[in-house]
Amino acid sequence: MTTEIATATGGITEFRAGVDDLINRRSYFISRVLPILAVNADFYVIKGRRSLSKGGAEKLLSVYGLTAIFHKDSETLESFGKTEGVVAYVCTLKRGDNIVGQGRGAAVAKSNGGDINKTIKMAQKSSFIDAVIRTTGLSDIFTQDLESMPEFAIQSHTAIEEASVADDPHYPYERSGNEESEEGAEMEPVPASERQISYLRDLAMQNLDEGAEKEQYMANIESLSRSDCSEAIKGMLAMVGR
Image (cartoon, rainbow, N blue to C red; front, side, top):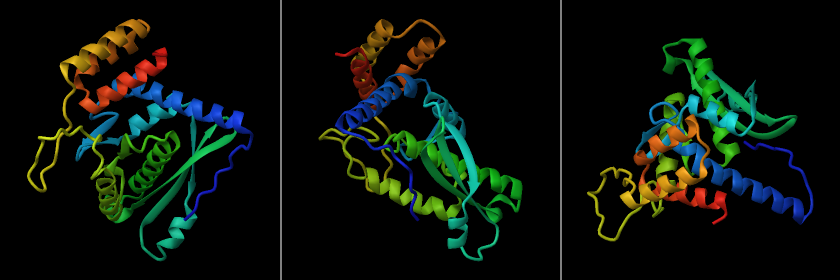
């Protein structure tokens, strides 16, 4: 399957501006948005990785100023042939009149007790979350909510995600030379150090505006992992130009 998205063409100045905008958005997200997303509401931690929920995806949609449109995914349905009870959607994300990204999602009625309405909602939810993750470029931070994926997709999705982080020394946790685990054991993210927490708290106190957002940010700092706290500090420093 291929997805074609029209992109604007221009010179090196426009390209640099686009790259700078992307970097600034990512830094803002890591330093300001990620710490206030709620565990077990906006995302879930599955096998050491954050799995984005529908509620979390809706927050990201608002942060990035996007709107979502759903259409039946005829291409996917054709690829399944005569498989009974398959529902598939394409979610297209737009900013104003411009298409900025797409995602696909499918669900099977049999996996939802034959409830066609639930199956439709699950397929739309899957395509929506897929579109948000792809469009925002946050696939290294979030995976899709596995609850919204059909069983056959979960198996391949899990295998791909596990392979993608198997040799990554920085994600989902930082390893030191003396860290070892039994074969097959699941590693938990390493909590942020007191020094990291203290430094990030100082940065937040100095640079965030007073209000509910700042209060929630401060309250969630201690729950960050070491790698998350490191990224949040980098993002905060980038925002203040240090």
